[in-house]
Image: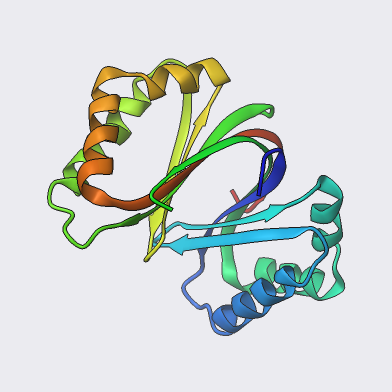
Length: 100
Length: 100
């Protein structure tokens, strides 16, 4: 991955009852990985959950957002699992690393 | 926060011995909040740690990166706590939310 590329930062809090959430999250991660333009995926949750997916272009993000199975998952998420979420579409302009 | 603004995505894995890390992380979070151009801070760690700080401008990020106490913390981090880390500087171009 060499900048510029794109990141979708998805920050969320879950409801108390998250039956079915974990299975869906795993399914969506593996579906994302099959999308054109997919680059990488990072996720961590304590109380706050942060999931970041990385993409080659804004078009790749648009396609992923409108994927039919993903749309169904988004609807279920709003109905059942998420107390709130926030999505940020970002252009990764620079990166550097240590020890990788 | 209304786009465009900037995000620093800091992804990391810690070493086994992280004596002093937690205290330093808290100190750096409160120091960041006092910096000019600071907007917000989000963090979660499972195995992977993700910390995102949000800023008004690239200049604000530069100043924070070169803050003397922060530089000392970065050096200690490389020497003691981080197995690896990756930093991405991003421009937040769009955002939307549910339930906030």
